Length: 71
Image 1 (cartoon, rainbow, N blue to C red):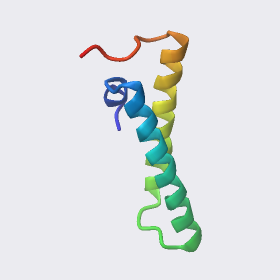
Image 2: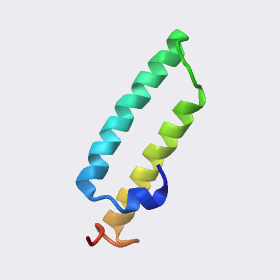
Image 3: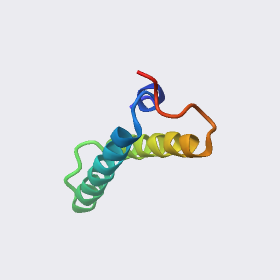
Image 4: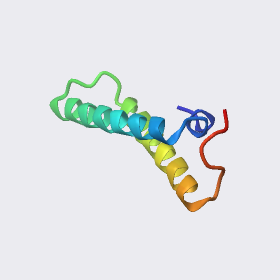
């Protein structure tokens, strides 16, 4: 997920995406521990997506960037 995509979403969508990515990350870590991992780089991609979402949410709280997108 690119940063432009994250910034274009509303807060409720970001919270939903964050919850689903955290669940996906949990599942990927479980698969990695059991040795059933198809692509080890998928953990890295999910972690970075989580970081992007948390960054945008923090920017909005602190007022660094615009609030929710105007549509």
